Image (cartoon, rainbow, N blue to C red; front, side):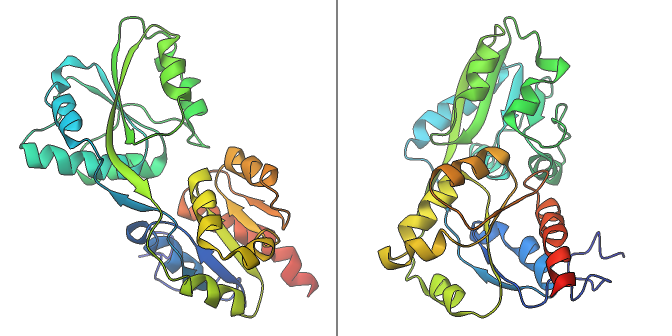
Length: 275
């Protein structure tokens, strides 16, 4: 098996990121692959989850929506968490997704999450796997009369629903989980600041960055804002700049673990060569 398919297998990039300390802020259950990819290239990873995924406040509303799945033509899953939490709710209800429904996944990782349940998505946007890329697809240009269910967490952007509604779709949300700030004693952040070498903070969403700032002691905010940030989304990177982060931006083509590690490798290579 090649190292491309197995993130824990050694490869010729084994020391490419030696000496770099990366703060990985993905939720606990999603951080494993990225940490393995980074460690496999010599980086030191420190896990500091900035989001905790749990059941929504209104589970009754979710139950009622999922009981009406036959009413919908298309179901759009926003994230991997949306897939896994939706499947948890469906299993509890002993329901399955109807065969006639078009399944859409906003992103490669979300598509893979559906495939984990032996479900093949019909619609997946091209890289950078964003809502905007999805709305540019020919398959969703005319949604007149379509009944669409967007599966997501509580809150979030309205871009997708507004875009589909403008094309004639009737849109509802199934908010199958909620995000919160994990209970933490800041040990991970303390170790990150104390570590030697180049610091990189990996960020995958605006909320993740907001929560990280809330988790850092006030005296450490300015230090944090001077660290280079690794992003998988231009929109989130722009949000960080507007929030006063000035340590530099490393931007991946999309938010998958592989793409973000590739971006970090490309960014670090000329610096390592000149060192």
